Amino acid sequence: MNIIVNGNSKVFKEGMTLLEVLKELDLVDKVMAAALNMEIVKQENWDKQFLKENDRLELLDFVGGG
Image 1 (cartoon, one colour):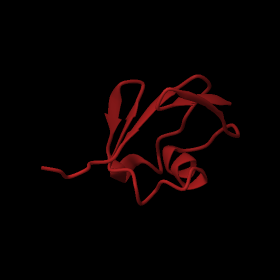
Image 2 (image 1 turned 45 degrees about the vertical axis):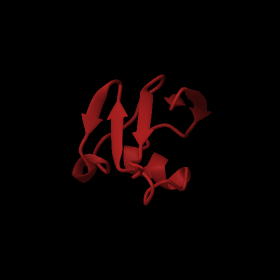
Image 3 (image 1 turned 90 degrees about the vertical axis):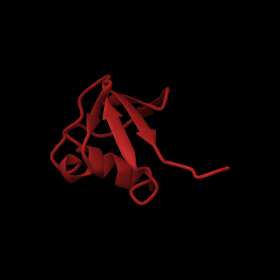
Image 4 (image 1 turned 180 degrees about the vertical axis):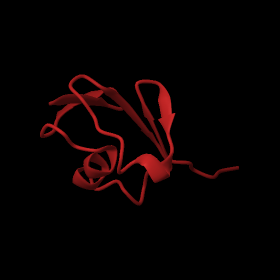
């Protein structure tokens, strides 16, 4: 299935959860927030949130600065 991740098209196998996608991208420990089709998905639900064809996924991490 095709998923848009932070504006880039990526292909994943059908029926993957958000957590599985993050693992495949090696981003589990780097992502602090995820939005699926403009809706925030709480971290405790990442393993229950299934993705589908043409979903738009935005992955965010927070960087301190000053």
